[in-house]
Image (cartoon, rainbow, N blue to C red; front, side, top):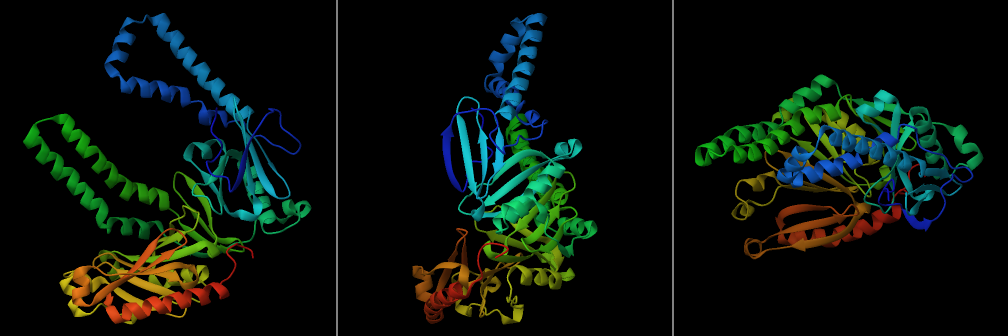
Length: 451
């Protein structure tokens, strides 16, 4: 049985029979079978690595003819598996849902309700760009993992994305295809040079690279075992590569645009991505300031979005430009300045030596803002309407020193903490935040885009 295009569907799944496309149903792009043709090969490779000695003995016992027959069977089997996966997959857009049917032995249908659709992202891995196809990822309310249609032709993918967004926004089915892509206005573009410098001024790649040099060397002198050194060094080198070169490649040519369906993010050097952030679903916005970025006035903006994996809004930008983008995603919100954040009292140093100076708090009419971090500062902004619960936490030593932590939980299953507040202030903050959250929810804008 092949996998459905996604694990979560934002509706219901049903087991049905039938193979031929129904009325209005369409197939994916003809190159799609190549996406799954490697699966049998991956199974054999995994089995070979699981028992390398046994695999070596079996290969030594086989003749050249037997090896050729096995290789042919693997290629044919992979091609057949990929073709059947494509042949038995259909999709259709109805007045109320996107329906995806798939499966070889057992048929499975995914019903994705259009009124629960939040965003439709387009991604193009490098190989897909070469052959001119695109993957659609569907962001649905109440799901942790995006459904997807992989792959469609570039023109078909763009037309289907526009149609889905138009129907989800309330356009009539007969006019949805004529609406087309909503217009977009560019808000910010990250120059490649700025991105490269920001990566070089980030401490994580250098720390991992240093660890990859020091730790394996120490292990070599201690054990003289090359396998121990290799197993230790490779993950560290991989982490250094991912946090430097990998980040640059993924965030290259980052562009933020404003459109009626949300903020659009376009980025990628090898793999191109076209994503949409629906403003109503943003639960938390974070401004990140690494130590070496401060002399340039640069910040990074990260997001917590309910039911979405979109986690970065701006990889690096001058603070003024970043705050301008934040006002588009959180209308009416002003980012508190450093002089507006109140620090914990000096007695908090007995609970958290030195690092207590990195904490701060500001509560405005629109957001609960908490900062933490001394070298790498993070200022988290939670709109009052997005606060799901408020808690006061106080350990025995904090009780002795008269301080407490106030935690606010958001709809993205995340928690923002105002640390080491005076106990009386914390109790008042607890009561006041509960009231601000109730008031904020009554006045909040709809969570759906285009509403």
